[in-house]
Length: 292
Length: 195
Image (cartoon, each protein chain N blue to C red):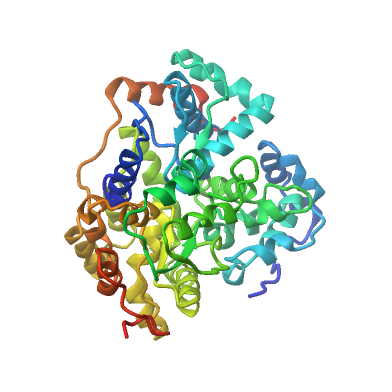
């Protein structure tokens, strides 16, 4: 998150700081292997993720994963270690030898879930100083936040959606909100990856969304980095801004846009959207999304 | 695309039972035997329209032992790990994990097209992780492109430049602290490669 997703990291810290929530980087964390390591070795992949879980337990905190892949891998590892004795027998002794005792009890959380559950929609709404009035926001959650492990207690997508009206924006009914963006395919098998992205962008445009908000840094990059190429390939104007969710929340909370890394977005927020938030009236939007 | 099994497996004795054995050895892998070939996985898969063998066919092939066809399929590289198949399978098969298993075998046996980025990304990723404990997208992409498609560096530079100008390229390698890194390497060695 220091590189491609710098703006995600910056806005995440800014929003949590503003709301008085403490985020501490897990000391000595290792890469969890994402969805890649398991293509080489399954046991080693699980061990890597288990180490992070054990580190979090030792640090006596909840483990917050702002990236969908990391979230899924951590959840999956915790589940598999709980369910399969042969895995525990294989992996836990290895962790013990490194001085890490694994209990499997650490809570794995996503920052949006923390805001909605710990802070609450009502409290969040009360902290909004610059409502995103008139913004039509299409939520995009991607795959790994919701499959194969939903957040506990049936935290459904509807519950996630609630943050958008809380910011004063209009929630767009975006039925592809959990449809795959193609992940790394846009970099490896481009034609296919770009088509999956195109399908999402096209749908967002059809719903007249002003922005498509994401909760995963990879989805965020994927959806915005190839828009020019996609427009050329399909001959359709499907360009749309794809902010990371804490950038939108931060904007509504009145955090300066510099701290939110808004200038880092490859497809910038339209001027009329921003000026509407900075104060003054939001200009009337026509059906095409252009200011009247 | 609907490939027929040409010349691949003609006789019972050509079936490779070790394929099923390895896939079934994964946690929860035995569920593969419960596959009813309903096709829900293939129907739900967003990549299925581009695959040669759909997930359903691959599960069938794994069960029976069509090893060469399974690991030679393009499908396994198209899998994006979206887990639609896994959550919808009425038999509770971890289809995504089967895909990972097939990828592992294909990579181990070197069965993939030359200079094909998907397995090269995986191999480079692992190397970087073992060395630094963490990964850096810029160096990962650069290394893989140099290995597989150096010309893409020429066509891809506009995006690189755009990311650079927007402050999204981090050239500094974020390394895990030394002691932790030694722990990680030690742990990976202890767990060892596939049993």
